[in-house]
Every structure is written in structure tokens, then in C-alpha cells.
Picture 1: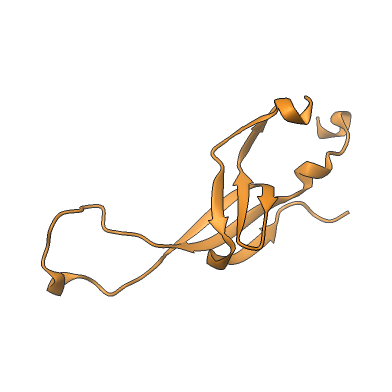
Picture 2: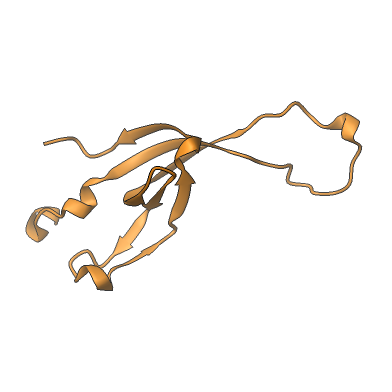
Length: 97
């Protein structure tokens, strides 16, 4: 199908991103401070098309609809903004031609 639609430059930036995030226990109740475990960040993994990128953050969108339509009519769902300072590794999932 992509061959019939032509090559879209905007959709050549598909990345798998490993990044670090803060977290808290699933149970948020008052508890004794003495029993708090050693700190550990959550390592996250996300996959998506890079929509916008700045020095401070990158926005990826995993689902895009209407790529055969005018750019202003396309829609996406599930996007996330990841601070670049949180990114551990980026893997380009589309081989270079």
C-alpha cells in the first residue's frame, strides 16, 4: 500500500524510544517513611512517528489516520511528549535508503 501512495517525508521518522520516568507506588496511602524502598526510576519504551522535536522535547504519535488526505485533515491518537533529557536511546525503525 505505501508504494501506491508515494513516499511521504513526514512518515519516515518512526522511532523506538527508551526513556526514564518517575514513578510512585500504585497504593497512595499514608505510610511510614522508614519502610520506603530504595529509589528506582521507571525505564519506559515507546514507539511512534516523530511529529515535532525541539531541544527540550519530542512528540511521537503511534497512530495516524488519513495519510492520504491533506495534512491539515489528518488525525492522530495516543501521542506523548517526552523530554529529551529523559531519553536514553532512540532506534530508527525505518532503514535508510
